[in-house]
Amino acid sequence: MNQRSTGNELFPVFLQLNNLQVLLVGGGPVALEKLTALLGNSPHTKITVVAREISAEVRSFAAAYPDILLDERAFEYTDLDGVDVAVVASNNAPLNNHIRQEARRRHILINVADKPELCDFYLGSIVKKGNLKIGISTNGKSPTIAKRIKELLNEALPHEIDETLDYMGRLRDQLKGNFADKVRQLNAHTAMLVDSKERK
Image (tube, rainbow, N blue to C red; front, side):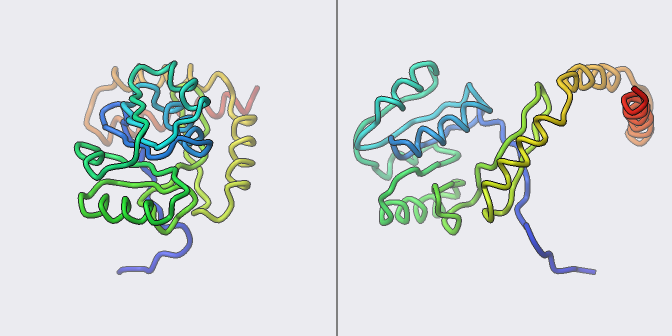
């Protein structure tokens, strides 16, 4: 039986951006914010930045990442050739719409800063502790709430969580049996880890 979804209908997904080609249109403060988010999570991502003017701050930030190409000029439609993901940080509304239309025609995923109606995906708040990464979305309703939840989770999650993840990864590799058996064994070990932390 089909039930109509309510609330946040976004589908959460984690992309291996280091295997994809990213285009960023824009060279100002918003572009710097997008670059920081992208490279803070995937520092080996190949990104081409195209803008009429690229700020000194963007240039300084990009200098630490050899996979960033800065191209100071007007956007051209050929910039979308070979691109998997496009991020637009331009304050030019007609340009944003044209890029959105062309990206849709080419089946390229696109994010347009501060324009949810033009986005295929959002860059949400991220909690990162070693190999653990948690994405937070308020469906564009309140970035402030997302930021606060991020702060709460960062404080609540123990720094030792990465050691636990490493242990569980090694354990999973050693388990025998079919998929269902492995899931049962991993669930049992996870329950024991939680119980031991609660007793401390």
